[in-house]
Length: 163
Image 1: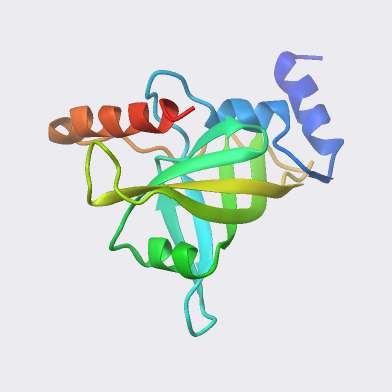
Image 2: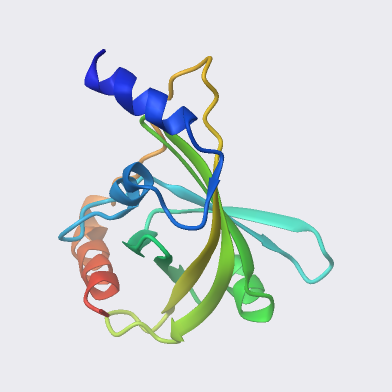
C-alpha cells in the first residue's frame, strides 16, 4: 500500500480525539513562519447568528493548543472576546477535521502590529470529517502579497516565539 493509502486508512480509523492527531498537528505546525493551510474559524455573533472567517495565521503550538493572529476590529475577534467558544475547520491534503475549543486573548496588541491581537485556542475535541469515498488532494492556501511578505513573516514569527 502506498504511503498515501496508509495515511488515508489511518485517518479513517478515528472519529474524535481530545487533541490533534499527528497528521493534523503537522498540517498546522509550520516552522519558520511558513504559511499554514487556511483555517475556517466559526464563532457566534451577539444575536446568536453563526459567523465564519478564513485565517491563514493559525498555528498548532501543541496538539492541545492553537494560536492565531486576528485584526482587533474583526467580527471574529469581537466574538471570541465576548464568547470564547469556537470551532475551527481544516481541509488540507488528506486531512479534513473540525476542532472545538475555547479561545482567549493572550496578547491584546501584537508586538509587531498593534492593530492585531494574538489569540490562543485550547482544544477540547477534534472530529475527523474525512469520508472514505473521497480523497482531499489540496486545501485552501494563501500567499501574502509581495508588499506584505515581511509583515506576514514577522507576525508568524511572533506567534511562534511566544513559547
